[in-house]
Length: 407
Image (tube, rainbow, N blue to C red; front, side, top):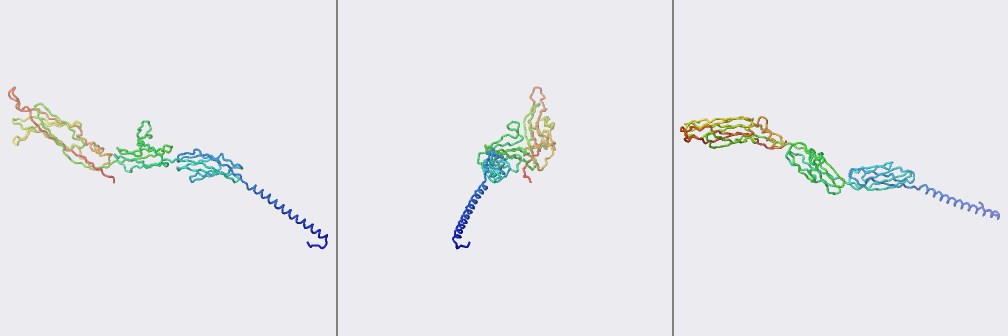
């Protein structure tokens, strides 16, 4: 505005100038007030209400491998609804659910801090934690030999079994699923030993089934079944020929007899026998008449022979002889499998057609006549009896067993 020269115009100018300044000031105050009001509204729009997380674990003390149920249904959205349940189970696994209920299996032992985070549809969140304690099952370490032969004593070794928490362990062995050692009708619940090492004798080939159960006394139990394959032993068999000899001597008067029993077939195979009865040389002829007999009872084998005089000019004695050969087949030399040397020996000696002579043998000598009698009645008999000797030789085959390794 151009400054006037007249007074009236000057007054008018001052009034207009002041009014303009006041208007500017009012506009500025109004603007500041509006800014403050809008700032308050923004603060109200940016305010978010967080939910409240509630977490319950059932149970909180478990055994390794068991499940825990987690219940967060007591959580409150405060405003709106809960849109997400996020679970961190503390063992490296996480899960997100829409429902506030889940379960989790803990495969490792230890203490786990489980965290739940709930989020509402306003964007607010809250967390809650609970501790889960997992008792570790014993770590069973059972050692069994790979190569077991009949007759071996097997060491079942579980001494390296440990408990994660270092607790003292109880060992319960059922050493044979086919036997009911406690008599309760259940063959698979016996406690045959409570040591951490067991020595198990074997008597025959076959399969042994059993189990070991280990208990840490606070609910941690682990079991393991075991199988032991018991193999036969292997023997090389050779047959060796031997002779068994007996000698007897006595005096028999006329009408008397002598007898003796023997069992020569023990642990051998009878092949042949020969027996020679000799009488002392009489000074006066004729020679005495004796009989030699053999009875092998189990085989119904009977043999007998009467004495016959020898050549007088050659000074040969009066004798009786019985003999037999090829009584059993010769033994087969080969390699055989058996549970034991005793079992194989019994099998070889009881082979059908090769059992002759294993029972009792009865030898008998009878003095039938002692010649000559007295020719004068009532006078002493000049030849009342005779001395004799008996020699018996039995040929046998003896099996010799040598254990050999499997190829």
